[in-house]
Length: 230
Ligand code: AMP
Image: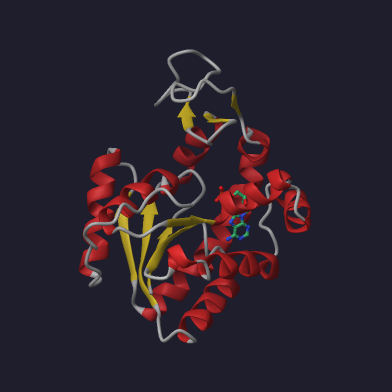
């Protein structure tokens, strides 16, 4: 099982880069934020528990998060490998992932950090809007919809995630940048960490991310679609 990890602060562009990399590698993206939002939408017990933390701009506790992620990795479409977006976010999660992979005689192939300065993160996140139907992302400044408040792709209403409002953003960043450091340390220690400049245009970042993964020894699969499953 090939596991590639995309790392970066919230707003660094991991959610944009992950599907692009999935298309190149032919393995699906697994985004814990999406898994949590689906659980909240479905009203599952795990979703109800997670929601309290998400709405407050805090990380969901490690035990809940690891359980959710490992359940997802056990599904058939993840058998060849996955690109992880938004996981791990703490040292405890990184260790739990290493242990689960070791049980399958596997390990993380590459952890790629998309680097963006903090002031740019706040600017990006406070303008982010998402469509109700499918989560298509927009930005007030860099990628506005054709009609304000309406998704170009499916016509559904756009909304701002509770945790993307400016007051929540700073609290979220302070906590999450701290625990991102733990995760970076973890992968620096195991020698799989690479970093790319996340301020460059989207397709340049995509090329740099793909180059970093190939440099880590992972070859793209042919004849698969990847990308769609989250
Ligand atoms: P994201 O879409 O990745 O920004 O995640 C949205 C929210 O889901 C985060 O602010 C956290 O509350 C929660 N979340 C997602 N991934 C994790 C994780 N690996 N550990 C803890 N909480 C997470």
